[in-house]
Amino acid sequence: MKAFRGPKVWLWRWRRNPLKRRADVLEAWVVLGACLLTVLAGVLAGLAAAGSVEQGLARERATWRPAVARVVDQVAGSSPAYGSHASAGERVWAEVRWTAPDGSTHTGQVRVEPGSKPGTPVTVWTDPQGHLVSRPTTASEAAFRATLIGLLVGVSAGSVPCVAGLAVRGRLERRRLAAWDTEWSRLGPQWGRMV
Image (cartoon, rainbow, N blue to C red):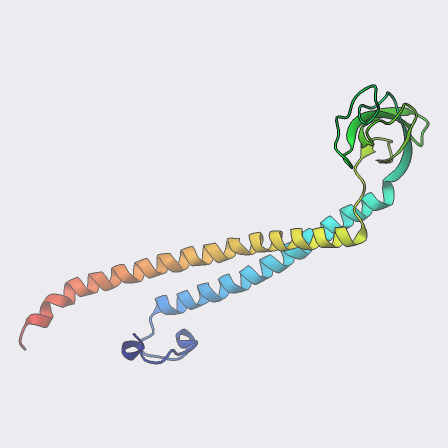
């Protein structure tokens, strides 16, 4: 195929050439604009998303606090009265009660050791209002999560101008082929004539 095309010439649409068409220049600007917007949108959106996630997780680490909760009822498990319902190392759900910093009492479901007796202390995490939350992420977990979400958002945001640029370029290509077909239908029959 290279024998028919010749060597690849970079940036040929930007060079002076009497055979260059307006459609070639327009396509060059579309490709350049799509590439720049793809990179710009991807980087900005990814950085904004990563920063937002990191800031939110840091806020959770700063405000969520551990509290000591107590098991309310006997927990099924390795106790002879209840039989063994959990395998070794597996924790089971149980109702616990804790006191919030404002003095109000709360109850909720958390995983505890099988066979825990009423009053057994369990560490839970609470928000400033005393509601039960999951353990906050560590700084390294937050950095990993923020990086991963930033990459995903960046790729997603960058794909929008990329796909739009490909669509515009495809439309220009179809218009160019239609113009060639029109010209060929007009000039093609004249090639068979002897001048």
